[in-house]
Length: 231
Image (cartoon, rainbow, N blue to C red):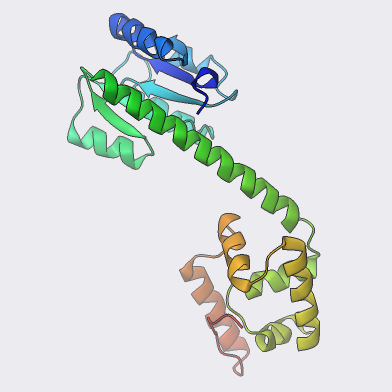
């Protein structure tokens, strides 16, 4: 991993800890930006290059957890590692559940700090790669016609060709033609891969929504069953 290009934001109102941590990370090849408050961090551009945040819990103004919540609501997904002298189980659990990479208690062993920072940056790269793949899939999916999108939606829900044809008012042969186009445009070779794409693009409904849809179809079209198998 290219540490030189990776930025670590250290947000802590303890000047001595902030300086010592910044010096350590700088010697190890990271670009370090020091902030004595959440306000200072928010005045900094966080959208450039790989980065993570080392965040204190108790600070004047916004606390660490409050800053974490704010960044999440703003769509910032930089990995966060909490470091605090006041760690307790409820705070730790809450921070981890909210997406924190880890929660360390001061004083922090040098090797442990570097290990966790590296893990946080690895997570950043993994998310960036996933975002890139999702962007590619969105571009491919945008090539589908409205009818092909409808067929795709029903295929990934496990609907057989006969049921898709009935619901869309087209022939089974036409369904197969649309399916062929969907597979070609999305560059896959199986319906299982279509389901993976639907999952990555968050196009699959919740189980409850799907059950409700199936129930409505059965009520309005009694001859059709709500199959969950892939044809």
